[in-house]
Length: 386
Image 1 (tube, helix red, strand yellow):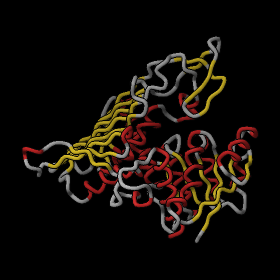
Image 2: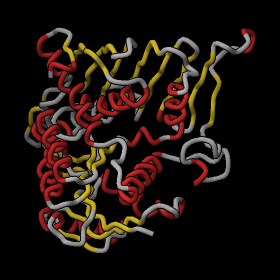
Image 3: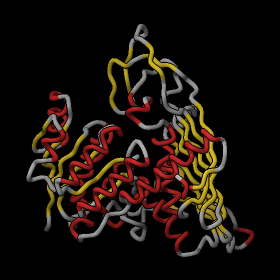
Image 4: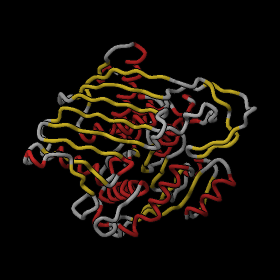
């Protein structure tokens, strides 16, 4: 069985999710190439050493350059804040390492394109972390679209709603600073919606959008990890430099219409990542908060029993589910990362590019930037013009 040594930069929210996937993948997918958890990297020696022990990494370093240059590392996993993606990915690619990078791929489209170019020139494999593609219910939606069972696609509408920063006293974490995160809800949440749209319906032709930052200043944090943070009521204030919510409309190349909403100011919505697709023969609805389910409607059903049906995507015919539990026993958020790693390791072992890869990351960045341009210029913007 082939094996590949992994070095990972970042050990908090996404670092824990990726570590879990590497550690547990072969318990359920034993025929997949083996990811060996070689090195973990983080700037804080106490934090990274503790995480390495907790998550099961062989060792740790505090400088990503030491990880990238390590002769035994085959794959570099990058889940550090977005402003670090480009420099680490380019150095790793030039060192001949395969790449697994979280989304959004980069702070700007130009940076994303450069990352793709360097990776291709280096001949390494590259993957971007759009984990929601890997929910079996989403895979079922893809199957229904591709097989034509929904007919011609007319509409794709999607919304990703959270509420973790509704409190105006919540501290100014790095995700609210443009120089580190690149954008707010648009790039963090909207990127997932854009990728799902590309995966399920196809490429977009043009977009028009609007955005708002509802809370302009926040107290500086004293401590932060993942989506949580602590601060003091007497802390100095800092400017919020990203969007709190972004909405946009789109026309797809195949003629379908799309609407997208990403917001962190939707009280009661902890992580509502949802979409609906309408076609000439039927519709599907998905909500990540019920990630094992797909709501399906077919116009061909007899009129007296027409209506959305709940399909529990846990049977062996559904993607990845034959490796998990008996029918009806559900899976969770962390398993989408396991499926990502299955694709990554399988692709490298088979000498092919994993999917989604940096090409998909660039396509997503094109839409993100086109929407930003549309907001600035208050007009429709063609994706081909960015």
